[in-house]
Length: 110
Image (cartoon, rainbow, N blue to C red; front, side, top):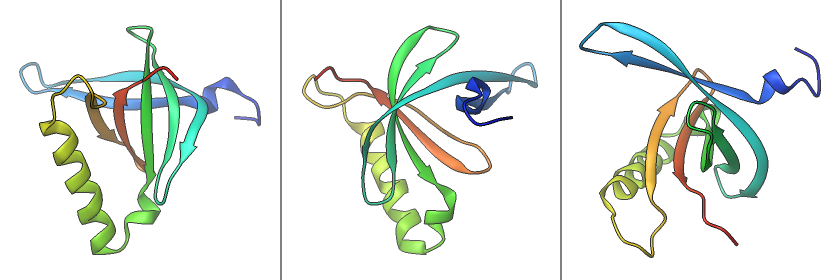
């Protein structure tokens, strides 16, 4: 891959189907940065299969070396999964690859 190569902006998720014991690859196109926080960067992300826009909170695994940071991330995921309200950003999905944890959320217009 080379700088500016669009393949660099493709995030791949391995999805294992327990019923069929098959693994498929789901692809997302990483877009512009929406913001940066204390331990994550939020990107616009396109689900390539569904052609739908999401917000992706991307947490580098290198930032999760301390127990407290990992606990904070797991608590955030648990809270997001449990919340269902029209005025709260909707949780879609969470997955990880070798480098990052991806929290996929509803993309809210400005």
